[in-house]
Amino acid sequence: MPILSEKDIKKEDYDKIALDVFLKALEIIGGPRKLIELRNLTWITSLMESAYAIVLHELANKTEDEIAEFLGITKQTVRNILRADTETVMKRLEGELREKTAKAHVAGGLAKLAFKEIKTSGA
Image (tube, rainbow, N blue to C red; front, side):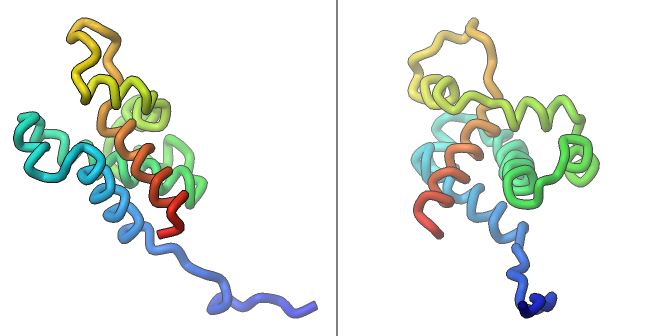
């Protein structure tokens, strides 16, 4: 049985995949203009961190500690991203939830949705 060499093993470009997740998440909310309308431009950094966290967790099998160290954020933030409830996030974005409900990590939920769409579409 032949042994696979390093060049035969597909290397993942996590930077590109994280960027794809980020862009898909922007598309999900309605594009960059919608982000401006929502007045949540502070989400940009959080959304990029969330995209990386999801990609590193799902594709590189990195732990919460490893992701936190790589991104320079707390382990709790990583945990919040990875556990974000996508349904709650979408309802919140659609304005169906009141301000006083339990907060969901919106960027984390968006990144999870975007990753799932990319994975499903095979892109």
